[in-house]
Image 1: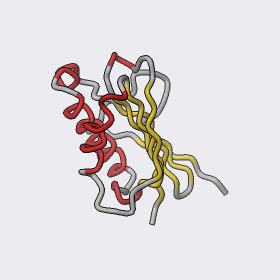
Image 2: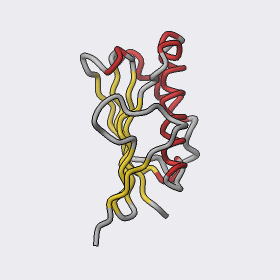
Image 3: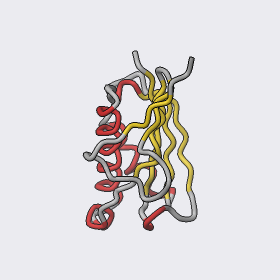
Length: 125
């Protein structure tokens, strides 16, 4: 039997639309795309943005009893593919090995005109 649980933490930005920060189904947690919601973070550069996005993801995972080790899939959306190396550098700081599957794509625009958005899927051990 599937059980759906909505995950919310005040330690990450509240959704800016009709969606949840994350949804847990059985042992899977689907974390919605995260952005650096604070404009100051976005203006600090793409590395600062990416770091805040990963921190947000960590807070949401923590609220569901998980951490970065539990991530099995991530999707990175960039406004400019020229930022790939910088975002990749920051992203890599949050993993020690056993990296998740991932794709990175360039998109024409992101919410609040940020430069990076990341969503993940995690699974309980």
